[in-house]
Image (cartoon, rainbow, N blue to C red; front, side, top):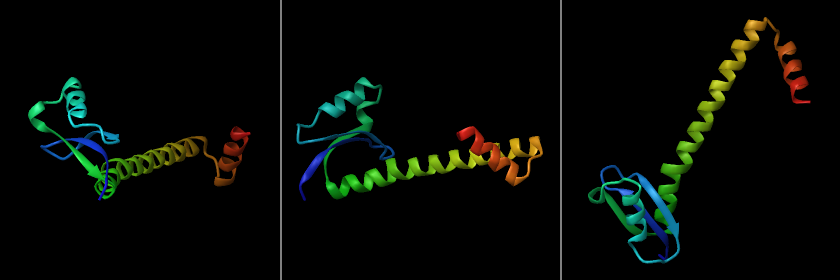
Length: 103
């Protein structure tokens, strides 16, 4: 498979530090990580192909982002319910208020 870029990861836990597309030589991401305060002994820079990058992307970027969005939505709904109860609004009154505030 053709390499699509480079990744720099933590050896200790596989966490992605940085990704760059293209075929530039290895070493740039390592230096970036060191400049960012990472321990040189705990970082690995390597080329990745499309399949390898997709696995990293799904597990370390997309899944956490989806979970974060779900958590934010859950908290928003909890806060909304608390305010609705405080105001002693029916569902219909609450929806009317939300609609009025959107306009």
